[in-house]
Figure 1 (cartoon, rainbow, N blue to C red):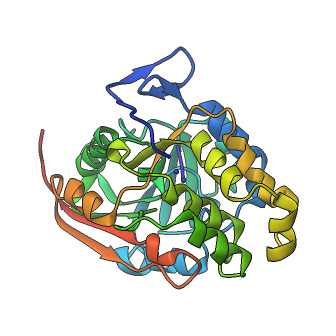
Figure 2: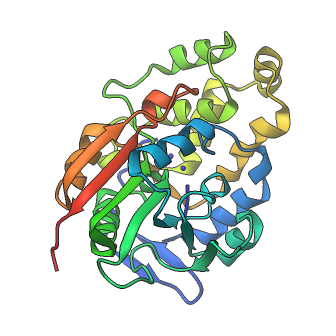
Length: 294
């Protein structure tokens, strides 16, 4: 799993296994991420972390001397810490995205919810957008529990969030902002479009195909969008990976995520990750003092 988000009454009730991949609520994710891998180089901020985000992880979590465990294989974060172990369920993502193992870093296949480390043994853990890509609140809580089990008593974790505003944006305003040049990247626009469609969805979740549907309603003429913004059509076309995807994303408000995290950590904080486009909706959730629940 890694580091990304229209209303649907979806009840995620269990985490189950198929023969070859892990599924959540009966929805298998490997195919979705393999499709994203194929156009990885066309993705940009805020989906991929800019330099100021990397600096925020390092500064807020004091990673320089630590063995860092990372959810996913985000290449921009691969140099953090004294040592790095990246954990991803997809061998294809590791092969296609990870910048390669060295004496101080490696990537392993593994399960974020059942990490391949002894309890209370991890110095620091990071994940970029990972709470949004696992969907419903029960899975977010399960991930918080997994992090709390893995961290040492003085360990710390940081997760960059993709959070929706308390008052949803009007789609007309988002369209006008984009066409006037007020959106930095197409990938920022994707998240803004997604956040207009959350509505009253339980747990702030949506199937990613609904992001594409909302985008097509808001921007029916892609050539116009390209001409007005300077974004190339292949970059705009990256949104088409959502068309037949079974993936479910979530964009919960920051207050909801802090409240969920406080059940598993005594020290929960929020830090700004910079000034890039949409940075105000991509803060770092910093977690310390794990509560021992089992």
